[in-house]
Length: 164
Image 1: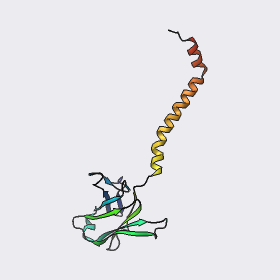
Image 2 (image 1 turned 180 degrees about the vertical axis):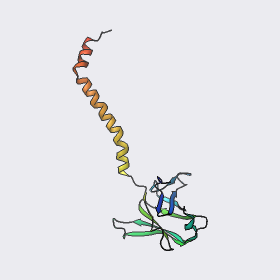
Image 3 (image 1 turned 135 degrees about the vertical axis):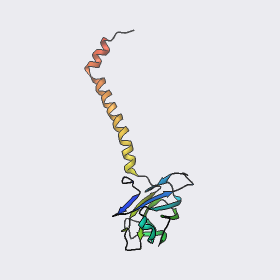
Image 4 (image 1 turned 90 degrees about the horizontal axis):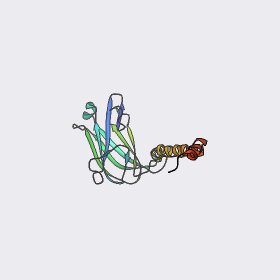
């Protein structure tokens, strides 16, 4: 779980966030990159058993600008206890950036773990990284082929090769 990007931990308290869009992919779960706009099921697993007796809530806000104060509340799940350890909500998400905040009412023990959701947006950094490897391989191949064609060794071999 330590390598899980959907897990947020503050001290000994831990929560796990998942988003689902069964109308597009029935069994696929997402964390921060939501591929499509539309109805989305948000699920928070209260990993720490102590959190199941505390009032825990969730707020989803759509960012309208670079400033976090410029945000609209899309969903607000008021803090209640969740004996089954699962906090659920269904929201309609448009394309854009969202912040999901999970908070405990009791002493604010979670210190507000947040998730930044990117809905139906292109991540240009990931796109560039996925293209970089094949592009470097093609450029290296072209360079080696050019050097080979321009080499004296290839010309000598070509002129001395037996013809059929």
